[in-house]
Length: 122
Image 1 (cartoon, one colour):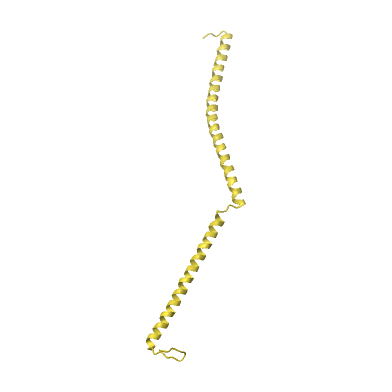
Image 2 (spheres, helix red, strand yellow; image 1 turned 180 degrees about the vertical axis):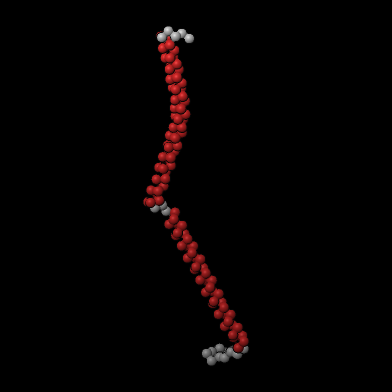
């Protein structure tokens, strides 16, 4: 059998249309898979780039973290001072009551001393 440019092949049109449709579907499927892979790879690259960008600390972020740490330290100091002041308040109230009692006692003693000096012995 000799095959050349002029060799003819007989094939039913139904088979030819089937082959053309199968090839077209294969090309379309390949194109869709390639497009989907490209889209997913692009999304992954963008996600990684965003993740890296967000993980980097900018100077303003560092300054804010330093300010937060400083404020936290100040709040701790104020809490300690407030607790001491509460203790001082209790002590001051106690001492105030004691001084008032002493003043009453001194006034009673003064009154007794005056009465004694005036000759009123009760």
